[in-house]
Length: 400
Ligand code: CTP
Image 1 (tube, rainbow, N blue to C red):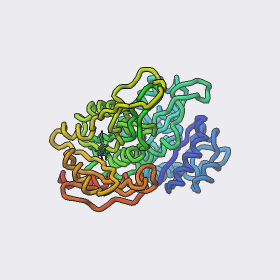
Image 2 (cartoon, rainbow, N blue to C red):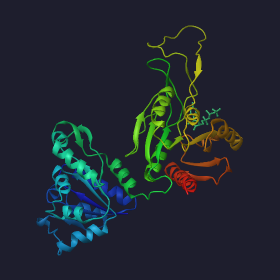
Image 3 (cartoon, rainbow, N blue to C red):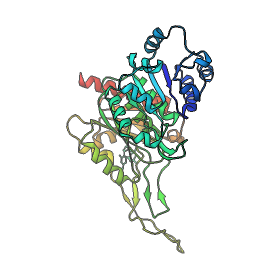
Image 4 (cartoon, rainbow, N blue to C red):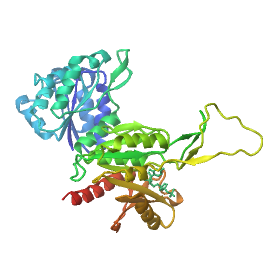
């Protein structure tokens, strides 16, 4: 992608150098536009050195105004596949929301037909001010994306919202904006379960499993990039992707309750969670003391979330499950496909630790029509994209 990175005047401008470097590393072409205030925080030389491209904008002291600024803003506006403003000041948000264009960056923002993404950073009082929020709402109504600032200790010494989002989160939002939407999945509301569940024995002990939730998180990202509105019901500690509604849960029962609350609104379900099959009969309110002699733990079954939702589906709703099998993979998976009443099952060979924590995995899709061409071996992010592409094609065929 050709990304135009606008940098306005805030302390967080020093982080834009890292963002530019990361985007270049990811294979994008990056050109930076500095406002006059931005150029007080970071130099054009830093940015052009990192990007290998000229840096544009107002810095008369450094002779950065280029020869034909009138044409330049149109050239840059056309050049960009995506315009990202990070950090974005309240001033620049206000200018763009109201169609004002007194400098190069604001003229580019007005002239471009490329998608625009804002990563604001400012003092908490400014961020929470109704004028700033109204400007943001206006920009959103133009179709612009916003990477919300995080909360933390700000450069001004205050603690609160307004801290520039992590560079990785901004890069994730950029990936979403730059990804081709897939017919079949665009506009679908997809519920995804991910991660391990945790079944508490007492306040300090838990039964869980070795799943990290990485595959479910990558699926959420891939379905989001394909154009789906994703709700991720997530156990474990991984961060949810940008632009995905994340609901944190702990136990299988909590996961079921969260899913049931969402299922009526969803078009489909991808059940990637490694749900504990058993939980302790009771969770003790106090830490259990050790006793002499053998100790017994009574376990009871947890609800099968996938089977419960599949049984409650309305016409048109689709369900995809996973089958982690160590032998007679397709046979066991076909039995699960039938018994849980699914549209598809993705069969994962877990023998010799190939799935949990492995670098590259293979998934074999199985539908009522039989096994399909295996996807992979691929790293989890690419495998998730392959799953989204495969399922988008299946849905597009159905919708045709
Ligand atoms: N699953 C679920 N709720 C459970 C157990 C499993 O939603 N309580 C879902 C998983 O997310 C996965 C699928 O069911 O999509 C298959 O899980 P797997 O562990 O492979 O199989 P099980 O159905 O649990 O059967 P078994 O353990 O006997 O292989």
